Image (cartoon, rainbow over all chains, first blue to last red; front, side, top):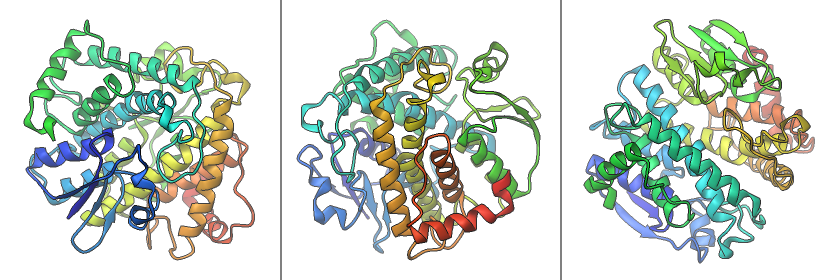
Length: 211
Length: 211
């Protein structure tokens, strides 16, 4: 299989870390999003939405969405479980993973896309045509990230990982969100949140974080 | 089990339809989001994020997110499968369901929340405090919905349902998005998209659509 990937974006990194935790490697092609390589005809023929990451299986099947790719990997390589174990735990992991997206990643995307000069007519990702940036979304996104950091710190006072005792996809989404927010989105993790900092150090020290 | 629900919002309806398709009924409590009943202390003690729907199991376990609730129901009541069958199909259904959220529901939420006078300081859902509406998001949301309608119409030219031959959670998300967009968000489905109209009529005629 082959992963269409971009080292500069948080969503492809989520899949790379997920695969690294499972010990899976595959062919990889880098696309430069800032240059718009994801919007060229050659890639749109594979994924018309123009979004990364995209996984193409050996039989040509295209899986064109981050969490859907993780789902495929989880189903075909169940160990270690990263999307939950029994019904309640699977639901809890899914809830926490989606909280990370809604409460954190969305704000980071808003804070970045609507401030980055190269994206002033690319306010939304993918092949949506011209969408003007909305500067007010930068502050809204940064305020969301501030709540996100504080809520995570509170939750991590009483548990090792974001969905409980085990490392899961929720930790992967949170880590990629925080690194993206701290860098490109210019809303760094506050230094004084000690529970969050402890967790961040632990998940960043895992070999998969380098993927 | 008990569902904290709101007849006025699209996300709780997604869960009600999902349960109806499975033939499941449960205790139900309605909360008025416009009046802010989801932000009162009594409900925040159950779900601190203040979001609906929220499902509480008989042992007190709280599942506080739409798709996570569906995941729990799917795991405990597998038939009929609404979240895919084998690994590739599960990934495809998840991708399509998430496309419906990202390409459609998010735009509908933006178009509604940033135009509705009662939410001018509630630009984001749940217990996030004061978030000012951003009027530019109304037009951005409506433009997203326009692309969403046209892309769905094109996809439905060659397939019965949104993820292929079978009715799935992706159809539920799309139906709830369209009814919400057509009503509260004031971005109705265009009449001239015949494939979309055919699908819409079919899924609206299912008994579950009344849930």
